[in-house]
Amino acid sequence: MIVICLEGAHGVGKSTVIEQLQKLGVNVLDEAFIGMPSYNIHPQSLCMESIWLSHWFERLLKLQQTNPDDLFVCDRSPYCAELYTAKGRYGAVLEPFIRAQIEELKASAGIEIYTVNITVERQTLWDRIQARLALEPHRQQFNEDSYEWLTTVLDWYEAHRWDFSVENSRSQSDKADAVMDVIKGMLGQIHKSVPAFRAYAASPECRIEWREKNGIQFRL
Image (cartoon, helix red, strand yellow):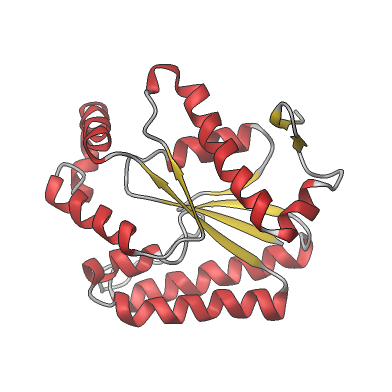
């Protein structure tokens, strides 16, 4: 089983890419696919984030039992817990723990997890965030109105080690084309570098066709 995790700061387009992939028939998991319980402790405490991480990996193990050769695309990866747990205080503790689990799943369970960092030029991203806040002011509760917090988030993403990276700074005047460019760029990199993904792409179950002249096409 292959799991592709989309990463990146708020506003880079992760949810939009996920929605488009779902329309194309790809299996997707959004960032809130696990209902976390509420206790008398902050939801982003080390304890609660550790519970979330355990549930995240458990979900993949359950999916693998019935979908051993399938592909899933997930909104965010376990690594985001490094940034959001107590605002990054325990990142140095969580990173090797998360990476070891990902390696163990590949070696012992046949689950390959890859991360894709979606990037946007900083000023372009800030402009998009401001436009979104005008439509969705409730996002201020997540500090999305703070340029200082955005800078912290972007610095963290730039310093982290990701498997792949794809740019999404193109003008959003034709949003559908821009999203498809991101998807094609992402899948093209993975197809080139991951043997298991090439095997999946060649299977009749895959909705993605690889054409040398015309690029990536989708079987709808």
